[in-house]
Image (tube, rainbow, N blue to C red):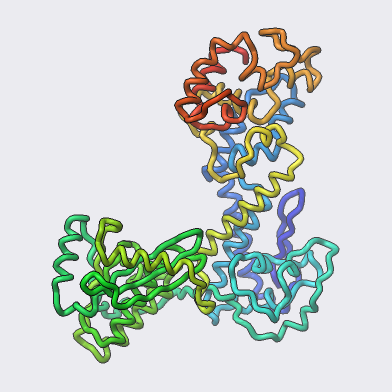
Length: 513
């Protein structure tokens, strides 16, 4: 029994459907977990900064003189983009993807891994029986096994038949973690002896003096490594170099693909220590410019990247059995200040970003969560472009939707009334005569101030001769913002640097009640 999420026009309902052969008792904690997840979504929707931005956006709409125009102002596509509110269906999908990606990190002995195996191995015969676990096929960058139904077979439109019989893959053997990094709830006992590793993180000047002293120690002459990580064009890499007399004697590069910089830094520290131990060195010096990496290599608590800390811990403890006098010094140094070893390690890390990663590397949970976020934003952008509402906003603002509210609704220097007026000018329906005439509330769209045939937002902002003396500050603000040439509606209503000037112009005209 698995929980089934059905998303429709009237919201979300949770139904229990027989989607696999798991027993009823195993289903209950999953149902409760998913119900809790959905409850948390609802709670966040009421208390999160995004919800507060939505409330500010809605409250700053000046009430129209007619209910019809008021409804037009609140076009859903415009509201979602203006208030930075992720559409409900995408929000639910994002939470499901984040939850399932977390489930992939569970140990093999966990009951959830059995249920995940069933969700991966078979596609539901009826699309209505798809559960939250079937969102696993939409998680980016995981290592999808070839012996199971392809992507799109589990979560498919109603009336679409599956192309693979689930019974054909039910007994197939594959890694149900899909290559995701493992995260252990408990690794070491609290009374485990500490590692013979000293991590030194000092202030900039003190760190440079400590590095100079450490490099003068002849015991570490052949065991001094500089490490670094890099991220170029979305690809990460780590490196470690052993330097003698300003020359690279040994170099290790670790391409990580869609990883993070800190992961590259930790890989550099790990590989450098591993190589020094293979060379039978007892006094090892590793120099890194990442404080997070120096701390992360010694932190085995449950988190993303834990497996690297466990590898480091295991490596040191195994070496201690044959080398009781082992001592490792991990030293932080400021980056990009001309330290030869650090600059050479940085160049090697950049080189690693251009190489193909090892296919056996684990998939990082942190990177997966970032890619899920980008995937959802891309879906939102595509949906926004094809939306039938919000056309007036699209004509002036073609930027993709974002979860960061625009400054218009977060600025404390813009009067609430003025921000409401600017919001109406951005989204379309307003108190301008062209808009009111289109809705049938006045008999003429002509401008009352100058007599022009149509009082549109372009006419009000750029063309009306009655307000020409008031536009001088707009031109000055545009030049200060680096916008030269004639003014246009789009930068006036979209450029944050012009927001204050446009607000003053709206207030000075006295056009809006």
